[in-house]
Image (cartoon, rainbow, N blue to C red; front, side, top):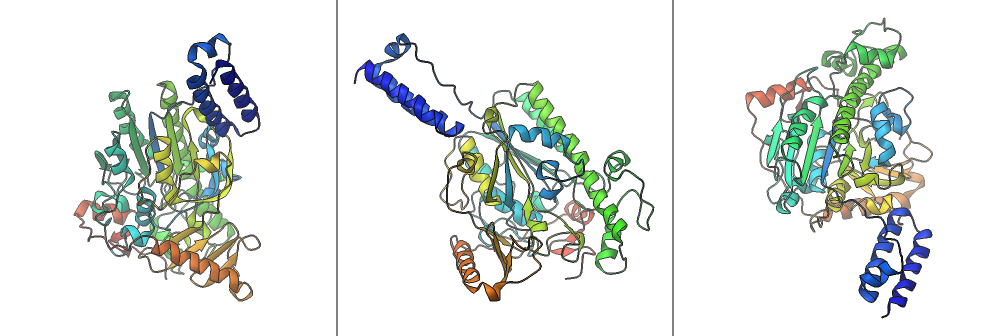
Amino acid sequence: MSARRAVVLMRGARAIRQRLPVGIARNASAALLGLALLAGGVASLLAGGLPMPPATPAARGCILISIDTLRADHLGCYGYRFPTTPQLDRFRRDAVLFATAIAQAPSTLASHASMLTSLLLPQHGASYKRGTALASGVETLAQVLLAHGFRTLSFNEGGQIGPEFGLGRGFERYRSAKVGPGTARLANQVAPAILWLQRHPGAPFFLFLHTYQVHHPYTPDRQHLAMIEGASYHGRLPADQTPLEVLAGINEGFLRLDAADLRHVVATYDAQIRAMDDDFGGLVAFLRQHGLYDSTAIVFTSDHGEEFGEHGQVGWHSHTLYDELLRVPLLIKYPGGAHGGETVPEQVRGIDVAPTVLAVLGVPSPGGFAGLDLTPLALRRPEPERLAVSNLDGGGVAAIRSRRWKLIRSHLFDLARDPGETRDVSAGHADVAAYLEQRREAQLAAAPNRLGPAAAFGDEATAALAALGYVAAGVPARGPKR
C-alpha cells in the first residue's frame, strides 16, 4: 500500500474521530495511525506534515480509597446540601462519577471482600457474622497485581478487615492500625502511604487505603461540627458527639428522638465526613506537588452506608438491604484526568472495582472475577444493564437491584415511584419479580459457594472491634434490635 493510501487512512481517522466520544476517538485514531505507519512508512507520513494524535498517559499506579460507612447522598458532588466535601467536589472535576453504585453487602468485611475479589458474599466466604475469613483458593486483586510486577500495599484501620480475615492476601505489606473512638483518621493512613511513595519513585504500585473515620461512634471535633451544624445544639443528647451508648439507647427504644435530635445525630456524622474530606485533600495535594497526580489512577468509594431512621434504626448498618445501606459513592480519576467530569447514570457494582483497577493498569482480568471493567461506561458505550446482587452478612438473605426495580427476598420495590422502598408491589408485577428472582439465583450460582476458615482473634483485635461497636466475631455490641 502506498504513502498516498496512508494519507487517505489518516484523513479517515480524523473524520471518524470528530463523530466519536473523546476516549473512543483517541483509540480509533491511534489504531488507524498505526495502520498508516505500517502501510506508508514513518518518513512518508512525516514528510506529508500529518499531526500525531495525543498519547494517553499510562497509569503509574492506582490508589483505592475506601471510606467505611460513607453514604453517597451525604456528599456535595452527589447533591448534598451541607458542605461536607469541598475537596472531593473539586477532585470530581477530574474524575468520572458513578451515580448509582451498589455495594454487595451492608457490612464491612463482606463488602470489602467482594470489592477485592470481584465475587459475591457466598462465593468468597468471608463473613463477620459466621466468624470466617476469605476462603482458600479465592484470588484477590492484590494477588493478580503482585504477579504482574506491581508493588502492593495497604494501610487500613483493621477491625472487620484486619489480617485475621484474610484480606491481606497478595499484599506485600498489609498494615492494620488498631483504632478506638475518635482516633480513626484517613490522615493516619495517608502518612505512611506518602512515605512509601517518596521512598520508591518510579515503582508501579497498587495502594489500598481504608479508614473508619466516618463510622460510629460519631466523635467529630468542634471545628468541623460547627461547619455543619451552625447554631449549637441544646437538646437532650450530648452536644459534641454521638457515642455508641446513645445509639444503642435510641435503637433499643430507651431514647426517643424529635426532629432536632435526629438532625444533631446526622450532623455529628456529617462533621466526620468533613474532617475526612480535609485529609483526602491533603493526599491529592501531595500527589500534585510531587508530579504523581496525572499518572496515578484514583478510585474513591465506600463499603456501605448508614441508616438514619429510613427503616427504623439510627446510626447503624448491616441489618437491611435497603438503599441507605447499599448505595455508595464511586469516583474514578483516570490517568491524565481522562473523561474527567463525566457522570455515568447506569447502575454499577462493588464487584466492578477490581476489574476496573486491572484495566487501568493494563493487566488482564482473571476468569474468576464476576465483575466488569467500568471504563466502557465512562466512554458511553452501550451495554446490557448490570444487575446488582447484595447479601446480608452470612449470605442467607439476598437482594437484586436494577435501576428501576429491587427485589429483597420476595418483596419488590419500584424505585422510580418509591425510592424510599416502602411499598411491596410484587402482587401487581409478578413477571418482574419472577425475572429478578431468576437472575438473582443465576448470579449466585455463577461461582461455587465457599465457606472460609475460622478467623482467630487476639486481645488487640477484639478491643478494636469493640471500639467500633462489636465485641467478638459476629456479636454486635449493644446494637439495634432485630
